Amino acid sequence: MAAFLLGQVKIKNQELWQQYVKGVGESLAPYKAKVLLRGHWYKQLAGSSQFEQSVVIEFSSTEQLEHWYHSPTYQALIPLRDKAAEVHISSYSH
Image 1 (cartoon, rainbow, N blue to C red):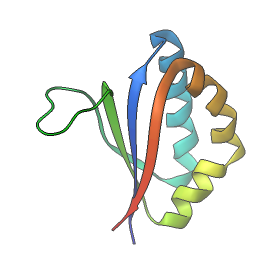
Image 2 (tube, rainbow, N blue to C red):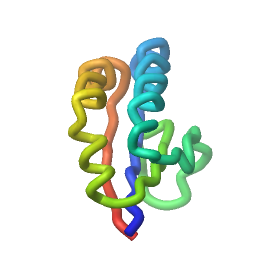
Image 3 (spheres, helix red, strand yellow):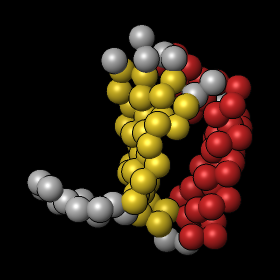
Image 4 (tube, rainbow, N blue to C red):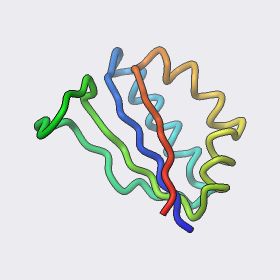
């Protein structure tokens, strides 16, 4: 059963954010995860949001998503992420 990660982002430091994004891309490779969407906010159609960007990443299973998130490689990126942006991350299964 596929699993999806949704990240919503408000960037605080663009240079640090780019470093983080590069690291995330490298960390996903062993999990064969696929970035389905990485985009900038266009227009709020309903409700309100403080976020500027979103990302959707597909994993083969919730287990793979959890393994990636808790991996030493990704965990090492979290301090950089927190300096670079305010990020909300959610997981969904399909």
